[in-house]
Amino acid sequence: MKHRTPRLAHKVGPALARGKTRASGTRSPTLVRSLSKSHSRVICAVWNEMVFHGVCDLPLDEIALQAGVSRGSVRGALARAAKLGLMEVEERRSPTAPSRTNVVRMKRA
Image (cartoon, rainbow, N blue to C red):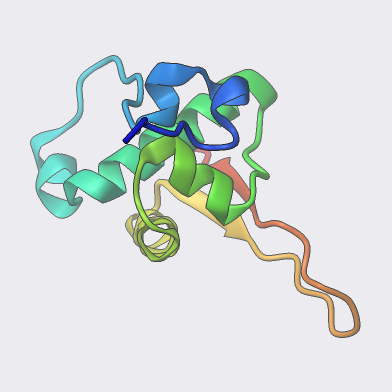
């Protein structure tokens, strides 16, 4: 059986499409203990988007594809990061139309 690449592989590159996120720098031991591996991968994928565009307004499915995790893990990771004070998540709900994507920003120190 031939391996199929995800449909967004051409946008994120083959390494990122397989769930291998790029991370650099050091993380505090407290932060490492408070996040699971999947949550760390989601935060890394969101951070990479913020580095290039200032904010992350990708749909949850695309973040999940880049991080190599499920959509539920993305929701949980964003909620956990907001609870820890790492990021601000702005939900853009619409009562009459489909909701727009969330906007994620880094919290200012």
